[in-house]
Length: 168
Image 1 (tube, rainbow, N blue to C red):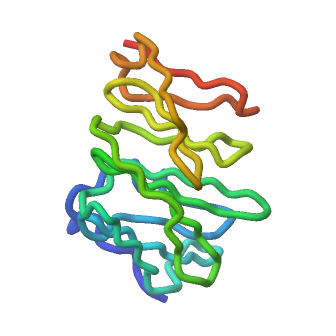
Image 2 (cartoon, rainbow, N blue to C red):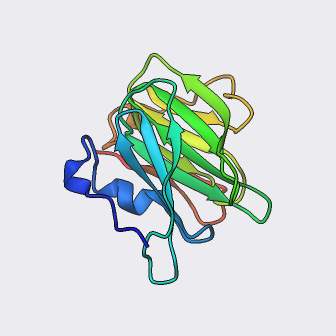
């Protein structure tokens, strides 16, 4: 069994990465291990690391800003956001992660959240909310006045039919 990575030694790690990076269904946690690199660690039932990390090298080589998982009975995706790009990776239980999408935008990315029932990712930027699927970025953007000035937080409701954007 291997030990947890020393988080104090990893640059640009925000404490929320630990919570955002955990996927109970896959018994896996994703953590930034270097700028531009995410490590996927397999955990046992006592939440001890039992594998060397499967590495995801981000195309942008920028530090991770936000993580979000989508898991259904058929697929598992992880969305990894940097300051100006989002990458979506298909995570197979024992195989190498496969990149589905790299989406670059000329805006500041704050957070990413998956719809709880379908592989639809909402991406909050300094200019509004965008929607991305594992296959492509959707055309168009929803611009809400309060989304531009929000506290960089948004969430889907439990049924996935509404998106809440927290205002000032």
